[in-house]
Image 1 (cartoon, rainbow, N blue to C red):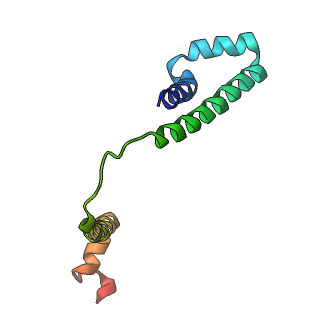
Image 2: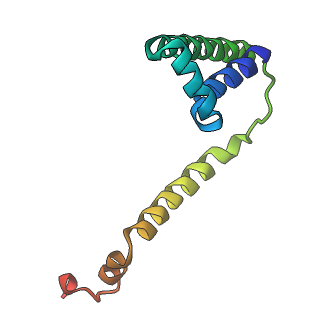
Image 3: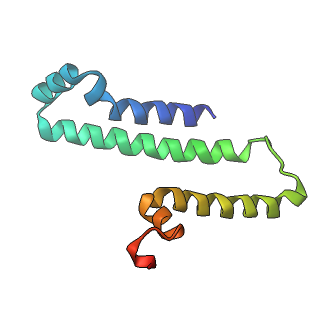
Length: 109
């Protein structure tokens, strides 16, 4: 779990440099040169990503089960998800769909 956290902190830290410390980043680019900065940035990004993946795989092997769903809830979950997707589609279609449904659109005449 420690490797996962370290990898995540380094990965997010290196990708947040431009947001958090733009002056520091500019000073490093000026002192190193743009090509060398991109190389260091790339090596840190790739190594932190590899560390993040390795840390995740190590944490996954030693993780305990936090939640165990009830055996009969799978069909209920599927039904509720189907209903939620239909409702999401209906409410995102906008007023045109409602006019079609209630017969107020010239298309329905």
